[in-house]
Image (cartoon, rainbow, N blue to C red; front, side, top):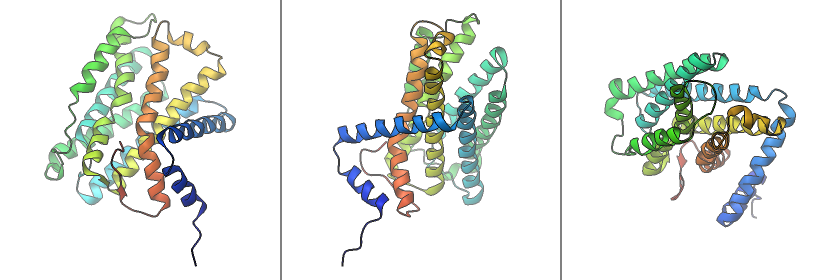
Length: 272
């Protein structure tokens, strides 16, 4: 007698069999449904941005637990951590000279823990660092982000250097996870703590994206004018959307693996 599939497994199997265009359509519909849900249950949408930074901090805490408990940094990308430290440091500078608030405190805590993770990978746990797998050249993202920041940045009254730094950290944050995804692409097997960390990044990216999209909807587009003129407002939203979609595929397989009770995430070819 055939054992009936659980509803979640049945849906997962059906989605997996669909062509790429249908999967993309379903992803967009799911994202829109999630935005509508958040719009009704979260009254102050600024809380979504705070939540995004808090989830990022939780993800870093998972890494710290991994490093302290397992005494290994296998599967982690040092280059992603370094890119994260760079955009956080630049964003902190912008916060101090342009706007100091709760985000400054959250970013300070996240930067401190990120620097600790970098120290552990570079020195204490260097023997377990998979340098051959972490082969993404970071200048491929740093240089384009800097050039894009020079070309497209806020048109506010702040000093030009501060406006350049602001745009640079926005662009760099959007692609800072790419080296980590390259490591997972090279290994194909992601151990639990690393998977939890990357999933936390995915959730944080979605919450941050939801914050901006809902703010634009609530202000009927006035927020875009407040951010400046020209292409900059559109680039802010595009950067948030890019961050979300970069991790969307991984998050799907993470949830599927979690539902299936698998402790180790095995990625099929072509993912991330």
